[in-house]
Amino acid sequence: MISRRGFLGAAASAAAVVGFDPFGHRWVTEAEAATRPSFSDVPPLDGELAVDPAARQAVATDLGNIVHRQPRAVLRPGSARDIATMIRFCSAHGIPVSTRGQAHTTYGQGVSGGLVIEMRHLRRIRSLDGRYAEVDAGIHWKDLATAAYEQSPRLTPPVLTGYTGLTVGGTLSVGGIGGIVGGLRTGLQVDHVRELEVVTGTGSIRRCSRQQQPDLFDAVLGGLGQCGVITKAVIELVPAPERARNFVLQYSENAPFFRDLRLLIDRAGVDHVYAEFTAPDPTPVYRIHATAFYDPPATPDDAAILAGLTTEPVVEDTPYLDYVLTIDRLIDMLRETENWDRLVKPWYDVWLPDSTIEEYLAELLPTLTPRDIGTYGAGLIYPQRRDLATRPAPRRPEPDGSPFVYVVDINTVSSTPGPDPEFSAEMLERNKRLYAHARQSYGAVLYPIGSVPFTARDWHDHYGDAWPAFHAAKRRYDPAGVLTPGPGIFRQD
Ligand SMILES: Cc1cc2nc3c(=O)[nH]c(=O)nc-3n(C[C@H](O)[C@H](O)[C@H](O)COP(=O)(O)OP(=O)(O)OC[C@H]3O[C@@H](n4cnc5c(N)ncnc54)[C@H](O)[C@@H]3O)c2cc1C
Image 1 (spheres, rainbow, N blue to C red):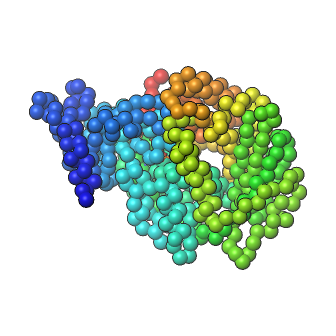
Image 2 (image 1 turned 90 degrees about the vertical axis):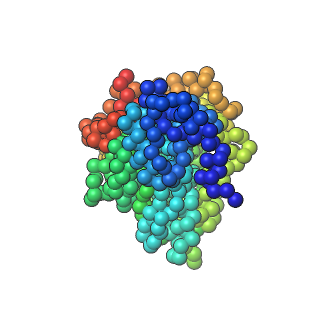
Image 3 (image 1 turned 120 degrees about the vertical axis):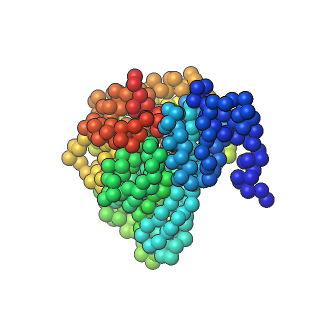
């Protein structure tokens, strides 16, 4: 056996980085060092800094396959201290730094031409007790959910994304909507964090919470990596149910679909609801997935759950963890059979208020063709209860008197692997157009995981009255402006 460090060292010794040439604005390898006197030494690290082409190419794009930019180096951190060291170094030399979770955002949000920090190297569970788990930010939600479920009594994070092969740091940086668990009774993942360890843009390692440095806590939760790198999170856990009963209901018309959706999201005994839609072919299909969790010998009251609905459901009943991993199994299959990671994914994701969503979908769907979603893509609706989402970010629509608000996704997926500049350009233009209209006419707000081109002005409008606080936090915690340039929030257009 050879250690990871030993292996990497042996494999890349000639390519190992020993410094940065501030004049040539490039990293310097050991092989080049003898001939290049003008570089600062890279400080010692617990992990590795790689500059070999394979390491850089591996992080040059994300799940979207739309934005391609090779970084100059990749940090495989061995500790939060490594992240702090390299951020201080990059900050001093004006080198952009991006943090990469699983890179499942789709428009270069975590891509950078400077340094990319690969969080997958920090993925341990530090502690797990009856109420909280402290985890490294590079851990996948799936691994935390599985470990929590193995406890006695069984536990679970109160909110889980539809696909759970995403990192804790990645979804906490965007919001974390309960695609498979949570939402109707819980808020978002950012609402269930007790404490964070963060490396700021000045390279300082801080602990923050609602009580301790709340401005930093507010700036990094849903903060798109602008003010710091989340290195650890203390996540709330709750008792896990044993089983999930899932009711699937299908519709071809807007009105009965929304009538039943509204009944189900407000119904006692229903723990989770999401919906799918397709483009008309020739009519659209809407599908509601409503789930009740339970512990035998008690069982859900099916008659009460289904009372007054306009259609009959298909019922599936599974162990809780099988239910949680439903979308993971689908993605694993697509990864094996369809080259999933390389398909082009120009995703469109917006929040809509309850008062406009029905009208919006009625107008939107007839304009879509099957190609707008794609065989491997999905149209999705995630209802959320407003008052349980307590954090300043992610941004949401203005209150309209309804307790509910929704995320609508057109998760477009190409039929063949990319890159495909023509398809990308066409869909980016579509997203721009859809967003401008939805914002203007329906009060939509971006959920910034997808591929909607945004100018600095758009970001300013997006943050609205929260902009001054966010801007001040950026100046305080990342004064050199090196962190996460991908979304272009603080870019000078
Ligand atoms: C199949 C699928 C299903 C999904 N289902 C849901 C869902 O149900 N609910 C939902 O909300 N989203 C969902 N998403 C979207 C997903 O939440 C986001 O894409 C999320 O950002 C992905 O996590 P990641 O680890 O890949 O983050 P990345 O894409 O790697 O990072 C996201 C952003 O945060 C920054 N970042 C990453 N890690 C850190 C860190 N530790 N500290 C600071 N900044 C960091 C990155 O630079 C980037 O800007 C889904 C995506 C896919 C592909």
